[in-house]
Length: 171
Image 1 (cartoon, rainbow, N blue to C red):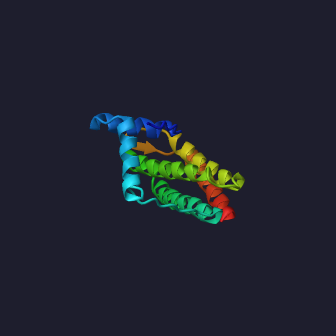
Image 2 (tube, rainbow, N blue to C red):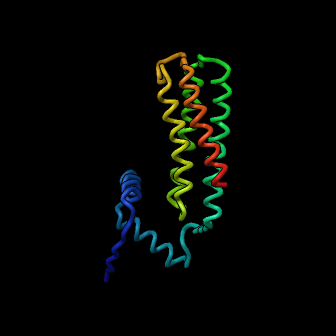
Image 3 (tube, rainbow, N blue to C red):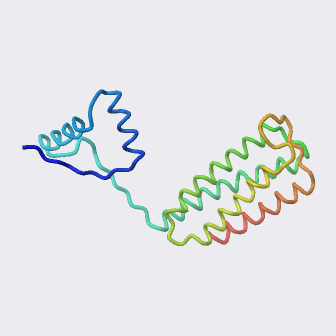
């Protein structure tokens, strides 16, 4: 006698696992049967299941740590901007990518926070900095130098000031 199992699984996990199984020339039925056989014979899972739970305070701290690092990077970029009206394009691209990476990480963390209003405002302020950078004259791939006008410097300074203050208020 055979039993039927119905399982709900995330689409992406299924697609990735199906690819691996195809490469191994193993069907879903064979893989699940082997999994169940291992459990039945060994009375345990074939891996160690770890669970960690984070409190809202832990999640908020992680979120704020990410944004604090982004602030340090933005402040460092401001030093470059204040030094000269012309910045090497590769340098400004590097700063932009780092800030964008921190923005993406913080945005992921935002989804886990119960109280999101202030956190979202801080994240929006970081996004404003990214927008200001993208709007710099000659910003983009292929430009060797980025010339930053006085109004662009002021706009960057203003958005950085807003981000810094919102972050301090949220801590």
